[in-house]
Length: 146
Ligand SMILES: [Zn+2]
Ligand SMILES: [Zn+2]
Image 1 (cartoon, rainbow, N blue to C red):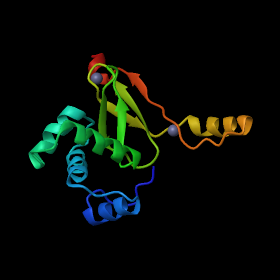
Image 2 (cartoon, helix red, strand yellow):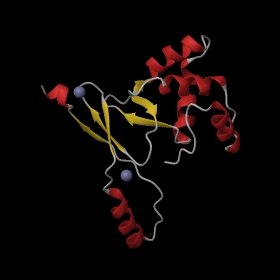
Image 3 (cartoon, helix red, strand yellow):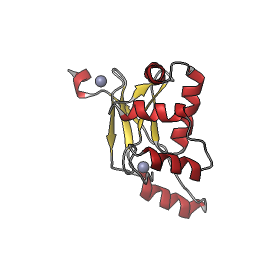
Image 4 (cartoon, protein in one colour):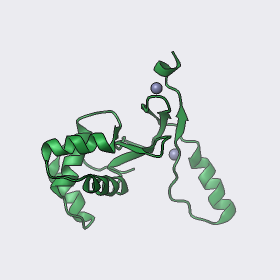
């Protein structure tokens, strides 16, 4: 994950979008702003409600598309919830993997990655150039164990 600018710097965000050939739309910026205001992972419905406080006419589908674009750009991280829904947060610095609590949907990230060495080995064995991977764990957080 290579985020090269501060998420607070709109000029840099704009330039980043333009470099990728994308428009820096008010909706995309509003979604970023909403996520930037919290450290928690938010559901798409919560994000939609908060985006509407900034841009009242924004539809859920627009929020969804904005989020997917931001995920593709690695500005936003997405986690899968047990019920097939997703939640989103500003992408963490560096390479991290999430653990999702299946009771309260709290997300905890860990920096340890067991897959880098494995990827190298598999690349060598299969001749496939492995570029990326997805790993997410599910569990029960400390509060929910109590
Ligand atoms: Zn929990
Ligand atoms: Zn990893």
